[in-house]
Length: 210
Image (cartoon, rainbow, N blue to C red; front, side):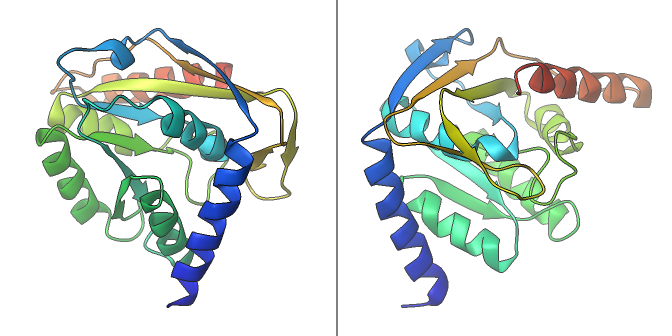
């Protein structure tokens, strides 16, 4: 067993024990949890909310949807994350804005067209914190998939001394997750309109952060 796999399996076991103690409150303004005929969506949230969103996915994700794929970095840490999310039934594509970016985008486009949802942390994997890169807007343009901004708040938590202030919910706390109303991105945008769409999504996600 590789070191990455060992760390991922150990982490998954710890998270499952933690998740069993948490309470979930959610609001689905996007309506995707109740869709009879699911449409693929781009689930967009800040990097430091990963645990809250994973917890909600584990509790809520409908069985009639075709699954979630997570974009992870091509680094060693990305490999650990890829194996960790696999333990929760999610797929992964390796890539970032600096490494394998175009290849990852093509693979994500293919998966969206197959009907899968894509989870993206637009300020990951290294920040800056709460700075939204262009990838999610490009993916929406190329696929026609709607963007679902997601927020997660925590009644009690630890904030790590990392670049993003990574959040770990404390046992027996409450996690509040909101799926905001969808954002549609036209296939063709001028440079100014593209930047306006990027800023709109960035500000919406910042508004839901704390």
